[in-house]
Image 1 (cartoon, helix red, strand yellow):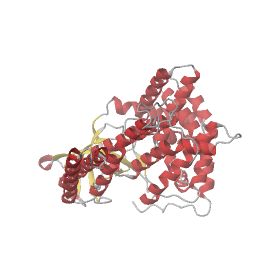
Image 2: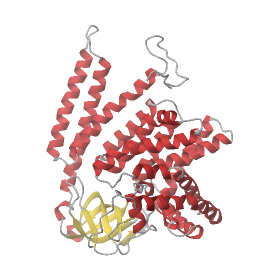
Image 3: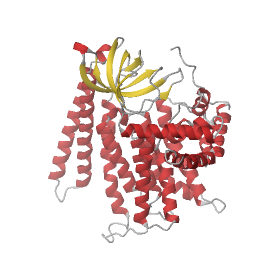
Image 4: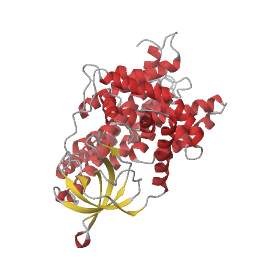
Length: 490
């Protein structure tokens, strides 16, 4: 605690004696954090509550914002009240009121949707596929869709709702943007805050094909599967598309279960770590070529846009790109306030536009990992660095430990499987993950234009993929590792 802190060597305090150099900008940057936390907390309370409860919470918070703002305006020079603190409190209450009100309106709209009244019944729907399918343990796939029309003929009602379809024949490989019609059974929602689920009773009838935003990523996925099949053997054939693109279709159920038991399931989902590795590699390459700061930033921006184009502009990918960029900014600068303020802005925006997603486990994992990266990765790396340990190794270990510790409470609270060997497993695979992510993403981008070069890049991933599979298998077999329950019937 007594050692010097790294506030940023270029910080200069314009206020002279009253404000230490480099401190005032950080304090200003952090002012967005409290309002964002208030918005998130109010949204979390309103999610799952009745619309009237959310509306009442919004009224209380709005009244508190008015009181705090009025008090702030009326503070005199001799009053011992921090006007700035009252302003932040007023903003926090106002944003909390907005969050509660938005969620109350969404809950009301969900309750009025025609699918809600059809739970347990069968109906026809017209929907647009919004993401790629993912396999389920009981067989078949989960397909995210946006239902736009419920019913058919005279009973058809137009109303949008994002849901998940559990399906088997004919639903695999539908690119995002495909408009389909099908007969479905409406299932009970998992929680009162969730929309109903759908089980497909018929194969989809394609009404309209996808646009370029869906065809492009679908073609990239198909080509990467072909590249992996040519370059790799065994489980590595399915693991490469899974780790790089989140495409789990070629991964066996046994391997997926091993990754879940070992606490490595997050490696098969596109996250902020993917973007950090890819953009970080581009920054290092640009620096090695002698590019200036603007050149490196431009190269990183192009890489980030290219990553989204290759993987697909799904909501999870866009969130990963945002949080990954923030984490990268935290690692590349001594300033903590600005990346944290940017993260707060991302949380604020997502909480307003999609409250259910903002309070979901996936988004909380990304946010908690990125916040830990912003606040603790560099100090931890400095602490664990030793003369015999190179700086990059210390950075990798720090990122792995900090992210795992920060996300562990979310994993436990969400009921996701994790065991006592999860942290050692993540430490063991830490050196291999960036290799697969960077080389695999390059192979995915190169595949459509030069398959031979993509095969070489994919083949270079073989040792790292073997290590991932080996660690997952060993850890899953250790005592104490959780084992997924057998799939139920149907």
